[in-house]
Length: 465
Image (cartoon, rainbow, N blue to C red; front, side, top):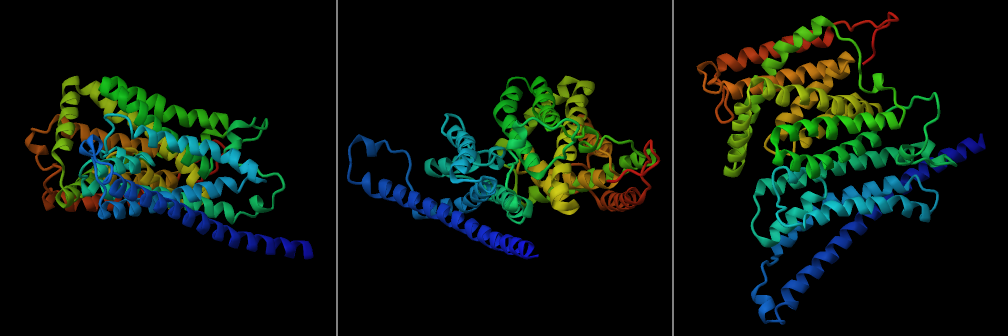
């Protein structure tokens, strides 16, 4: 009894200390950032002032007090992100030396995108604004050498704050876990990737695995996929979807000896449910298009963004309907659902519950598109797909929904000049005689799909979503 009572006190004391440590690490990170900013300000504002000569004449940037304030504001979520990650990972260590061994790879990985920002030609764009660490480094670079669009500044802050919130939630879950705090033989989430799995034991996807997989996939997309697509759009997209999005999820699941059927929800579907997906997603496409129009009217679209989109669209229209449909609709539906509504949704819902896992997966899905102008629409679709897949217990509902949505977008692109598609535009709202029935059809179909009985398995039991 006394041992159990001491254990309870230890857990409560450890949780309190964990909160204290989290605040201390965060404060130290902010103090370090302030000292760096002060050093930069003194060096540039005072040091170069008295140097004179050709160096100051060719100096290409200046730092004003307003810039320093903006940089500090952007550093706050970044400091929170690293504070949470460092605290969470070090919680698995049994000594200071072991903690340093865990954190050294994190330092190295974090430095890579920051160093990439220094490469010539790397500039802050709508895609780079949602890439962790790289977005902040590119923002600082853009601020020092010229002006930066306010929307990009806001996107960088919001995306970094979102990643920080995920990391803080993960760190809090570790600190409040009695098994980790009281365990004599601590096992880190990273170590299970490199250790040999026990024979006959099927593990389950976790939140750390899912976030790590997302980080790896988005890094591959940014550093490799973008280059492949720039060289050849169609082959680059195919390689990206198959090798950089779907393959890492499958390989990680195999490495951890996960139950593939359970992790990726490879379960039969109810034919009536699949039939409902067609009117549901067609009506959802109409409603999501109106959401996109609202965003365009509020923030507008820059000229370079419109030009790049028109260039990509012209390439898709010239390639023919079969290949274009396969690249735009089929491959993303299979590969992206395999990653997000498969591995990531399983890991996040298992740790954070249905609501937290579905919403988090949806936002990660929106960020994965590397486009702040489509972030809201993609996130809403991701949340919708996640809710249906979780409720129905099968990933094939997400694949069907993704296929229908992207297929509808491709049809609008191909037949943009047709009179019967004139109402679908990114800049003007559709008439009420289209949006009101779409809202009604979506509500009815979603209700029936949510309450439809699930398909029974071979053993006669009902699949649990």
